[in-house]
Image: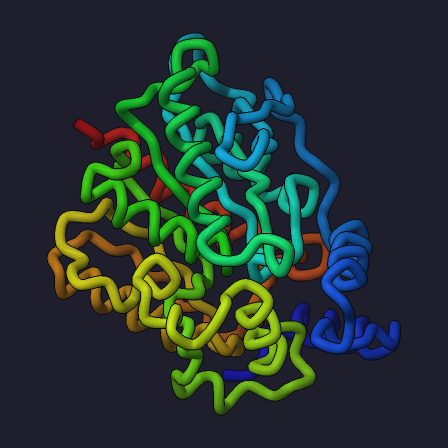
Length: 315
């Protein structure tokens, strides 16, 4: 299916701007470029009832968090989404996904707590997993003070954040992470081998090309021997039975498309309830381009609807 005209316009904007491919930059340069792009592509921030910065204790220092309370929430403990931002485990932060978190908090009528986990190459795998696990435990431990209903908690994220979310959902199933009732996996990276057919059909001039995806992976991972570790490649976990229900979004024009589809099929085969939204005309990353790509908001609203359903039926 052809690319959405809005996404085509975005590609033309990037080409006209002469932005160098991320893999030609150093990680600090890539972070600066990414945040500059978010300022141009992220819609105006919607109001929420509350947005405040926090920090969870971590083994290697404080882990920055940002808590959002949806504007229509009733008083008292609220269902909560723990959110891990995308960016290939190398770029992105609390500000890069500010709009996404605010919209999910309002549309899902919940609290969202975003995690600013440690990233590569300064902090290699499994640092992002360790920080996210510590943050999730802190949110449970401080549930009353934070206004969190710890019996109705979900995990979610885009791209690398989808990877982290899938891993924590498996850990929650095993009793290692706090109990979860749902997972939002938004064009997730779930197989560090990066050999799916979609890696062969996506051209190298897309924002996330196969070359850029592997550049991210190689800044996060220490070596090929880690690719089979299910904490890096949740697609290869020994079992997927008993994990929380999942909303999985894939984009056809994305090197991660086929592994995301495979993960949806693997969860379904394990008896997990899955909502799979396959966006046949979209690129990887479109959810954070809402000022240019109108489909972004509609997709986020569908993700929020899955959260509302999971929260309403929990327990």
